[in-house]
Image 1: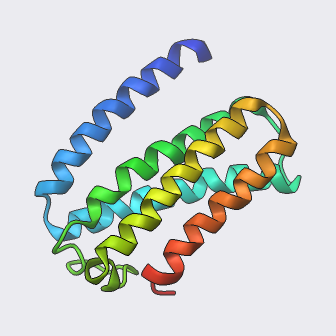
Image 2: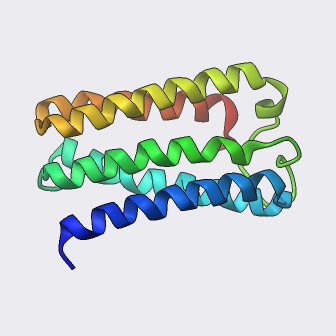
Amino acid sequence: MKRATWVPLIGAITVVGVFSAVVSAQTARPDRAIKYRQGIMNAQGWNLGVLGAMAKGDRPYNKDEAVRSATFVNQLLQMSWDAFAPGTDTGAPTKAKPEIWKEPAKFKQLAEAAQAESLKLVAAAQAGDLAALRPAVGAMGKSCNNCHDDFQSK
């Protein structure tokens, strides 16, 4: 199958998946929501790892791969927040700190900041310039760490 054919297919699957996941996360048992958000966070890490390796020169720069990974990071960030619903602080092993539910305004602020950085990351990847991608990857990583520092157990 040609790459141009499967890209729209992946987009359609993502839209269906997002809708299904939002509905599921809202009604899921806490253990399912925890596993869902952990899966999303793992996928974010994978894609940020691809971008980070390009930025450091450990992986050859490829614009198409950069755009793909940056887009996935953006989409995954949009999906993850629903899985932090009240009552999902327990029910399965989790590194999520109770502060997420005690300080929802701060958590939301950091989530929105990460989402904004992910849009900048996509734009930098679409520019097709490694020099533009490097600082965007660094800013995205910093934004992730800002949230993890306050809301994730080590």
